[in-house]
Image (cartoon, rainbow, N blue to C red; front, top):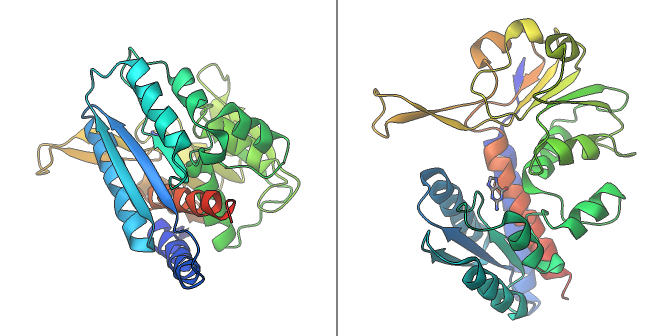
Length: 291
Ligand code: GUN
């Protein structure tokens, strides 16, 4: 078994983007600029947004972090998005999810101009992706594809089992893996909370994408010998022995599954860094589209 090392691959993606950004500067072209909106003080969201801003600096992008109080009104947030949409220098806009309960996720996502939708959550981006048109792919599934591609994992004719049907990961990755090009051409089964016979379905999976958000859910007896395992879970589990008070757990029982599979992503250091690399790719693309 071999690790699908998201840290190494994301660094390679970012190194490439850094070179391309330097080339743009030399050519007198615009440097990519990402605007990130962080609402309230959710610890996990703080960490993710900080990583996104840090990655922008690493690759030579500009970034603007807009922090809004958890009590911000939906109207004020929509107004801010309107300003960012109008600002030519801003290429990509992301609003970190989840949002406070009083704000409609749907309205916020739809308020982002589709040409700046680097998260790939806007219905126009999703529709284009489903139809196989050029589109911003959502960062986590896109990062998974980049990882599979980097390691040359065969996907054609394989049975991919996706556990979870969220708009952010499960649903889009199921569509992307069924596309008629590499990395795709999989036969895809999407499993969710109402799936019966989940274990038997998982046992048929050549590739399993675990994206349900339940720590160590996927056990060794659910995995076929030689399967490729992609663990999207990143749940904070209380741990008194850690200074932070928590430990990060994936959706896969890593130690038990590791000896059975051919490839597996670790948590942390697997899908997480790839999500950020994919976001940087989308931001670069949004900027390049203005050339
Ligand atoms: N929350 C969890 N994942 C994501 C993501 O990819 N983008 C945003 N904006 N919020 C998230």
